[in-house]
Image (cartoon, rainbow, N blue to C red; front, side, top):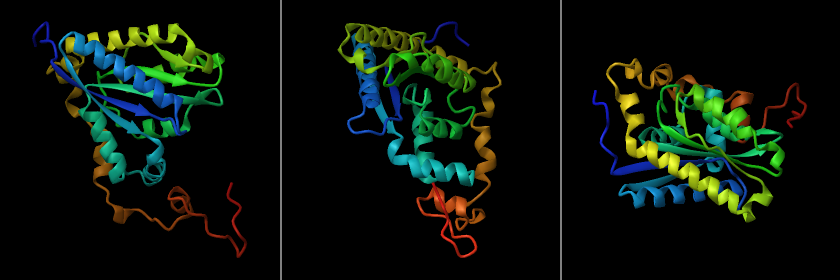
Length: 242
């Protein structure tokens, strides 16, 4: 293995956005990070392509995949988008002092080997500055478990931050950190190295791949709920589903 990898001249960045409102402050933050990264890379001669992965429209598909234990086609396509990315920008709203349940549910479906050594920018939005540590307390350990390489600068935006020049400075710092990691090619070297044990890539999906839709009972109450329906009444009474 070479000590230094050649600088990357073209990279792909996937933005994972768990914001569901329209307009979404989470999507706005993610887009600002992506644009600043593209600009920073461009200034150093590297072309960047950004792919957006909005989780809101996939909410039902994510729930079905969790219940069935298999990735349905839409979720599988989302995973392939992540697999092809050179870097990830992950952004989630904060609810109840924690990351979005939608974001966590999607993360639960990510194969343990899918994002090995990919550089990641971690970002979140919330209604109060009191939740700023959610990024480092919850997102950073999650992406550490997935063996990614989160950039040092975490990003959090409360309502009062949008008019602050400091948010722009922090975005620029995170974008610069991501750009350096991408241009260095360090992540690719780690993931592709022949001295590591990463040749079992995507092994966690092997068991799922041996199953088919014929193995799943879509008539159960749990599957009905996951697909947006209602549970069947028990004993002739209407089911109380909250």
